[in-house]
Image (cartoon, rainbow, N blue to C red; front, side):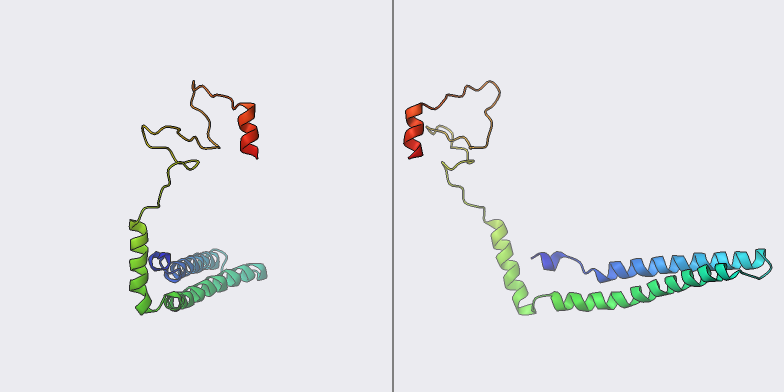
Length: 146
């Protein structure tokens, strides 16, 4: 049941958005206050544009992150199967994992048991180094083609 083992996307994404937004705001504030004290308090219109843009971008990312967390949790709850189906499905998956796939001898790609006559080599395999390969007789090719 892959749905039961996959964590929700919301909390991780929310932390990422909030962290990036907070870092953008912190460094925008550091730049703003360092320029204010260095230049005597005046910023050019171009500098105001960039300061305001970065600050609002950081705030927007933080708000998105704060909204994604609960939205992701609600979406996760809505994706989950109903509680009464969870346990039977987990049991089905456990039984399927414990049961090996059946193997039929003599099929292409399936090695024959040791000591068995007429071993079958898969059609797409290459003979081992030094192994002699016998050509098929012409009359055998005609009978198998029919």
